[in-house]
Figure: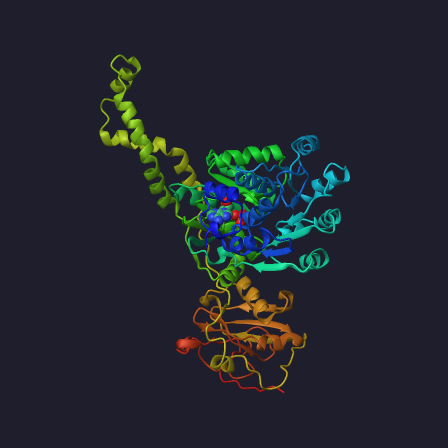
Length: 594
Ligand code: AMP
């Protein structure tokens, strides 16, 4: 389908061509035919990056009466940036139309916006709910003639606590108005809003474009929390060129990371909730002009920022949910370009990363951060271009009458070329090399938690934790004691064992007691009522080894299993005699209990 196939005015088609849009995106192809000339309510489930803005802007522009000076459409957005961005899109698509639009949002003076509304007489107003409501209550924004209410990113407005304002605003429209809603997700309150304010809406859902975005290479690095900033620096050091965004979970992280990056010589700026509109505009301008190559921001502050030629997106920790991850990384790899999304995570975030991989069906390979030694090489290579330039400048400079130069050359006349190179090299890279030399090793000794083993069902399960002898008996302290066939040598540490057992048995960690992690096996206890949960664990593995739990006799650490320990782990495991010895472990003990 081309735009020519859509029922849009010629003037709009021309503007679309000027804008460089060749063919409609999925949401545009579905929404524009039904919205361009009809008066219906509409729900579009689509997120940023799908072209949803033009999907409602174009039909609005098609329906606006250019001869009327009344406000005919109000577009509500969760953020100032998104409001500005929509306004920009409208302006770009109305080069051949006399349609005016004004953006209104909090954080800037009301007076200017009142003037814009009174003098500008816009047909379309785009705004954030708080300021819009304020202007309605002052009788400055009059919606009597408005035919369309558009709620963009409705789920975000809900999350940001605007839902009451949105409802009050909707009640200011006439009954005849049509409501179009766009939302990436459809939680209960959004469905309620639809039921309450939309009449028999047409619903269109488009696939999350970025979920299947193969043009983004995704990788992750695991570091300790205190090394996250160093990890960002090493990544930046290792890149030839970058123009990207770093996402942080909190504004405190965003601020301090940007400060730290600047102090280490990486021009960057941050965008977060505490900034005035003016500060945000300056930051965005500098970023768009590429005066800064890295913008550090929070998810909320980054909403609606329209910069689509990013080379890299870096996650400084993972976001709250999978949607947000997809949203973040979707800012790179746009318009046929290849993008790179790098996630720096703490060990505790591994499971979340696994869930993201699973849900998005994307591969987020683990990568190793470059070592300080490797980075020295990269740094020198990067600088060589610059040095070439200095060389040609220096060689071309005439120093015949330069007395200073004469003193200099006389003094060092005996130096060999190699000595000179050593001096220049040491001096040029001193600051960076000093930092590398002082920088810590970022390697993490891998803790291996349980994984979902491939053989999570069937034969191994039967061999595993079956307990056929009735309820396991508790110690005198009310706990049931278990032998577990994995220990330190399988890569487990105490935390890994605790986390894993709690997760796989779906019980709270505080019920796992007296954990005794040995070289090749472990013991732990749980209150009697949780013993079935432990025996019910299925399909847990550490590497190749299926994890099994056996109820032991009740004599405390070192006591052997009450039932037969039926031999080796998979693939021979410890069949070769690496049985725990001593401590009362009785290999052959067979005690069915009661
Ligand atoms: P949105 O989902 O509305 O935030 O749009 C995401 C990006 O896609 C923006 O940079 C738009 O300018 C761009 N865009 C929207 N529609 C098209 C189209 N039909 N062809 C190419 N780019 C588009």
